[in-house]
Length: 174
Image (cartoon, rainbow, N blue to C red; front, side, top):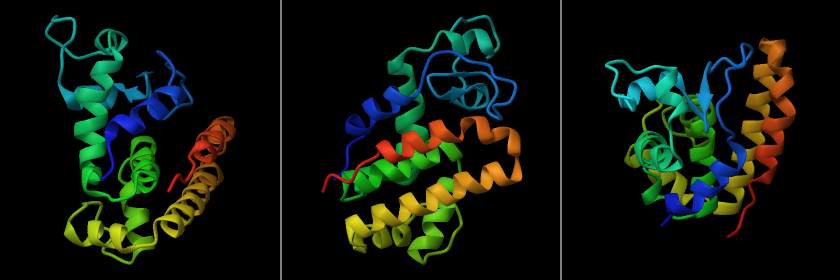
């Protein structure tokens, strides 16, 4: 079974510190966590009565893993129940970077209802698939998804090389 502790260093490698790029649709972001996501987490780190960019700037890596990655992304994919670590990595990293598309598109590829909810049928389809073939197909689909983002929103092109470098650094490891 897959383990979040194996994926977490990969995520950390690709996520920098605090940025607030006006072209980035996620807005203010720290270590890959957007302000919108941090508000959903609901943790007022500075204790001033609101959850804002000041709280986001105070994130630690432990906050990212324990309050965001594990409960909101890893568990959303029920990745503890995925047999292949490599498959879990590519699926969870996709939902981390693209929200519900990181579940709905893989569900479509797997031939189950693309409802964005990982349940018994989705997990069964993931674990029944040949892990290498599943990983490779997800990589192809994710690259096509990234290309479609740029086609529909050309200013996002400035991020494409980084997105593809990240995707291509995900390797199937058995």
